[in-house]
Image (tube, rainbow, N blue to C red; front, side, top):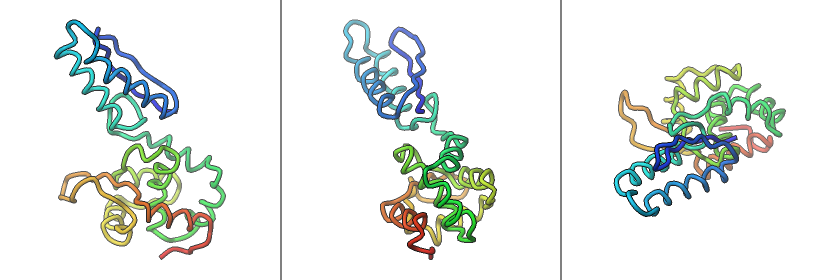
Amino acid sequence: MAKASIELPNGTSVIIEGTPEEVRKLLEYYGAGSSERGAGAGAAGKKTGEKAKKATTGGATGPATDQPNLAEIINLIRNSDEAEKIETNILDRTSQVNRVLLPLYVVHEELGAAYGLTSGEISKITTNLGIPVQSPNVSNTLSGTASRYVMPDKVRKKGQPVRYKLSRRGVKYLASVIKGTEDGE
């Protein structure tokens, strides 16, 4: 279930819940419509449009933030149709690359690649799944072995969080690992 919040031109705050597609449509309507509605929509309309766009880029996770809902990702992994295969082919094995890529795969497949994840967020997810991978190890894996499977949102700099998304190659790779046709690299 996707969530977003917007502020209408009259100052009313609205929280929207629904499928990612429904939320996107409403945000597009109210984001574009606020500056097109007649009298007095000038500066206030632009601010509202900017807030709606911020909510859209933040994904379907909550009120206009870039923070993903980690509990939702964990539940999607545990309750997935492929949960048994994920447990057998990723969680029960020792491949750190596969463990690190799993949350990114779920965000890509189940949430439509709505947002990227930082190494710290991936570490929290793996810890809650019972396969802890420490944040520095996640970061090293993402910039090393797994770098061919991910796309960072910016160049790595010390102290600056980088959000990663799975590339097409990464999606293909992890799908084959989950199916059991590839045992990892």
